[in-house]
Image (cartoon, rainbow over the protein chains, first blue to last red):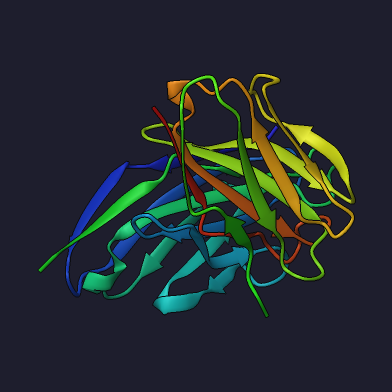
Length: 115
Length: 113
């Protein structure tokens, strides 16, 4: 069975600083990996996804993530934080074309941006 | 293209009543997933429907049920509502297999009083 661990329930960075949100996964087969963002009282918006191919994935709003199989990690980064990046971020994993296919979410990381 | 739509946006029910939540997937998506996001409990998988069939179910009691219609829209029913059922219920859709990712709706906020 697959699982996702997000390190740090709350991360605070200064505006303009590097954003690094950590995600480690567990899966017995090559997974699909996702990062979603949730703003208050809204649904989830897909930031980026890794399915196959290039391990460095670029998403919306300047975010990117790198799939590292050897480290079973899929950390999310952004070079320079903006105030508008303050939100809850969820890492997720799924097993493609599986009879048990569903997306499993990490517990989330709340990102705060200091002026 | 239209996104995943959920209705109603907000729903207030009394303990013991039944709630019905609706979800319309993106055109071309045959899979619908339901998640519960309760305060402090993260996103919990409820149900997965594909091609009209229930394919998988999370660790929830039988009073949580649903169905998928021929047009791939879906309904989530919660019977005998309890106070702890108060949560944001999110619906997502995807093509079968999920290769293109999962698109979420804005959710239904269910409050049980």
